[in-house]
Length: 257
Image (cartoon, rainbow, N blue to C red):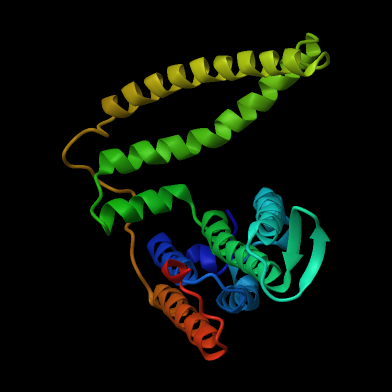
């Protein structure tokens, strides 16, 4: 986690802001509202304390998927306006291209605040805030926190298993079917190891009182003026995106399509 201005805010304020931005983008399929949200996020991006390289390493699979989704939408959407590409059964027109761009821009505008939330939030702080402020069950919250912590461990163990199997010549070469079988065996080994770890963790958490009715907290989750600004940013940007889109005639509600 980084040490930027955003990292010091309460996780719940960032969660509310992300929800507000996502909600406004989910109402309409147009490129204007997504562009407004994306532009505002890029303006305040330096406050996150996250480097562009770190962000790119985290979201590059999403960017690739959104690019493919935008292109697929442009090919599959009904033609309207001038035809730009004509490949027989497949064609791209001005209208279908605009729809594809809208899907791509909206997807990036949704993914970026979610990525900043993850990169600027400590999972322990999020769990504490959920239990203290939103009164969620501490047992559920701590169990979810433990699962989040184990995701990174599982990714590291997958790499370790891969290197160990390659050292023995398993799954490093051969046909596609043989490599698929090797990966399936590796996945099964990781699953068994994860179940054993989860069982030990559950017993340990129960022994330390995580299942009790009353519990104390090492840190108090609190709100400050910083959190008010973050929520206000979410409200203002969401309203601005909707207003600009309607003013330019680009507003296209999902249920009206």
